[in-house]
Image (cartoon, rainbow, N blue to C red; front, side, top):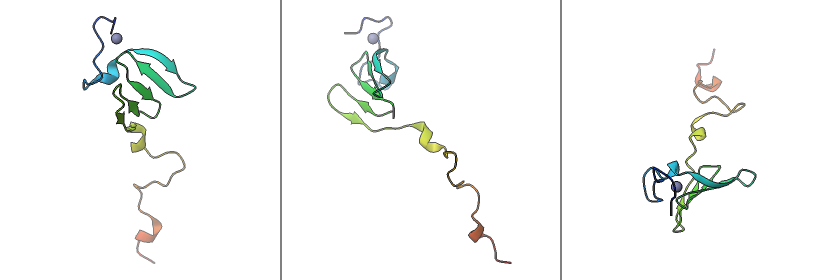
Length: 81
Ligand SMILES: [Zn+2]
């Protein structure tokens, strides 16, 4: 039962991530939201009914430092001199 005003979105709502955090354990990498969803640091979620939402972290869109730059043509793609 949500005590907040306005009430938190339910676990089945599209914006369920907007529910308030009740418990957070950053050292373990998870938080419990008011609507019963457990959110993990990798953006995966465990719903109250036991369903799982796979991680959907936006950071996967970026190239990490030190990784090959896939936007630059590789040397082998250039004509040989
Ligand atoms: Zn709430």
